[in-house]
Length: 257
Ligand code: NDP
Image (cartoon, rainbow, N blue to C red):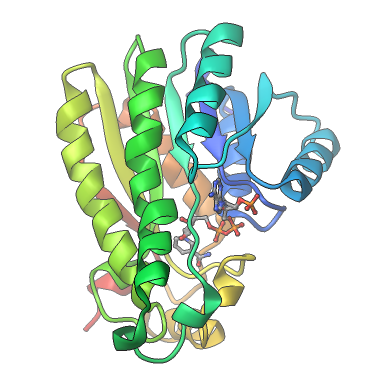
């Protein structure tokens, strides 16, 4: 336990189950004294989330529905948060989606619908939620999203999601400029592969994990706690001079040829 985020209220989007990266983040933020607001899309995720919170004796300020594909849902979620809680100091965006049939084979075969779906949910959503969240960030704060190396390099099978992550990282920079004048910082964590529900949809995921142990400078897997603590750092005052950045939490894999 520490007090780095004492009295800070942070919205965390994207806990589907105990393997979700957002759950690792929620635990790190809770251990640093933050008040949590959690959002979910599917009813199934809400039930899992509520069980996890109870099991870990975490009492959130709110649990709110938010489908990032739907502007009205986003507006309503942040309106409810504003009415019930008022000021927030941070937002964690840990949501993404692409059809599994687009996460295998050739990128050249990507359908128009598949491309737009991946961009919509995985990249545009950061723009839409930043637009609403900043209205509640009246004391400044931090926004952190989750990205992956497939944005910078061609990672087999990551395909349409790699292109969506490239858009997401570019959005981090443009958004950082827009909201910087209000004292809000926008950053991304680029995590190494972690076994989650979404990761299962990427063909050849196991090989992506094993190569980290073989080739990354630290020669060990990345876990939720490491991503949680790096996200905590970016949300906290310790990172007050950092914005528009992509911080790799991948045992150093990205520096290797
Ligand atoms: P999870 O499947 O656990 O989390 C994905 C989350 O996205 C779920 O909570 C899901 O909610 C949510 N989501 C999908 N569509 C929507 C939507 N329309 N509206 C609101 N929420 C939505 O997987 P991860 O924890 O792996 O993924 C979290 C983030 O981390 C993603 O951005 C992913 O790309 C990124 N990442 C993952 C890595 C990995 O190896 N796992 C590596 C690097 C980055 P629901 O289930 O309720 O639909």
